[in-house]
Length: 78
Image (cartoon, rainbow, N blue to C red; front, side, top):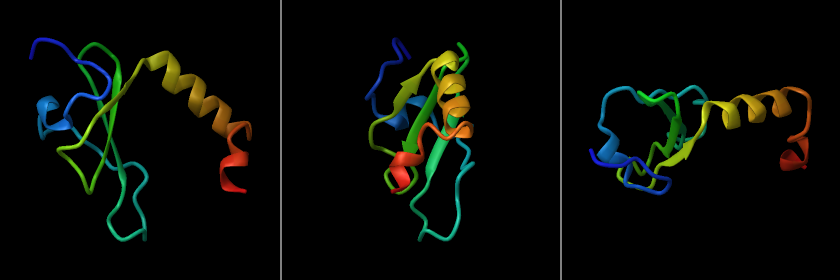
């Protein structure tokens, strides 16, 4: 693989290593995550595994998770 970039087809990242940390009773539509070799994290929609992958740095994900834990994302549920 030449270059990993935001929006690339998730299938280009391979089929191994994807995890569903947030699955539940939602009819199989889950977010899947994969840790990349360089430390970045890729996300894809489980019901569209060939769709685009969103790529984030470790720092971006750590800040997002910290914000969610502190309630900064609660507005998304209102």
